Length: 393
Image 1 (cartoon, one colour):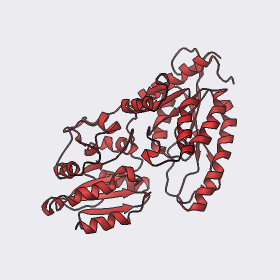
Image 2 (cartoon, helix red, strand yellow):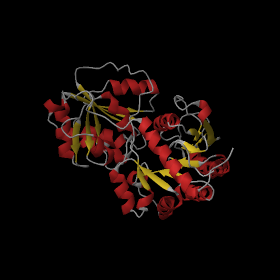
Image 3 (tube, one colour):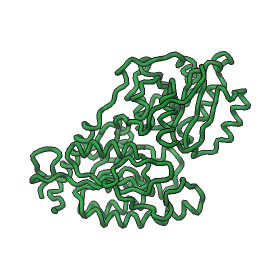
């Protein structure tokens, strides 16, 4: 089949595009669900390869639109484990999942991968698929693993992904520039924005006091700057601290003991700074975010942030680093405050200034998922057409 159809959502001769999408670790389920809905609205038959749900995770993708292909032993529905034995087992299972993915890819017109968990091995598998089908890779973070140190094997593996993909999707113009600077072919890079993400649970805010609540939420990792936030709180005078309640909440991927110790050294009490280091259920997350007065995102590095697009629809004042999607989405002084990454004094001033700040209705906006689905489907169709073939039923 040639891929020429009557609309951008058709693979040809009246048949929709069949797309196989892959998020092996289900790293971004809210994004996956929103993209899935946008693709379906654009006429794409989309199916996902993922892992089993963990305890406390709600089903968002339709159950008939996903196959829990990856990590059948290490992901048995229990809580996330970072024990060395669990990580080794998962690493051993990953190539087996990729082999099954390569086999299943023959049934689809295009394969679209969201994350490469082991870049060198993932690139090899995608290279096999590409001999028969177009491959799309979304580069959510153009700095691999958000700037974490990587050995040469992982670095080369990530760069290899640029070669084996027919198309690379980034969410921002700055991300496109970063990939070009890293040597990715400019003609393969496509900017398709990230859309707003709905809260999955009922947004019933938590009980709270009179202080202005500022929340840093998400998987707590070094690049997200929780340590910078603690230092900034330490530079506020007692009267300023007494007006705010800062919450650092989310699944801890770093040791928080040094942050707690540093907060104590700086004289920051439990009324000013609270830690909630845990995996949040959908309902708990919705309650936490709905109860915030402002949000703070003092990231050291980022392209697109799922947290940003999760909180965007809440219409709250956002203090964020002047990088990536923050810089391209927020309007400094109107929807929040953009600060130089790593600038602790400016961050401290922005926290104090956030108290009482409101955002005008409609001021925070993002591209809708129907438009994103259409643009992604158009990319698929163009790739299929360029190949001059697609899978027949």
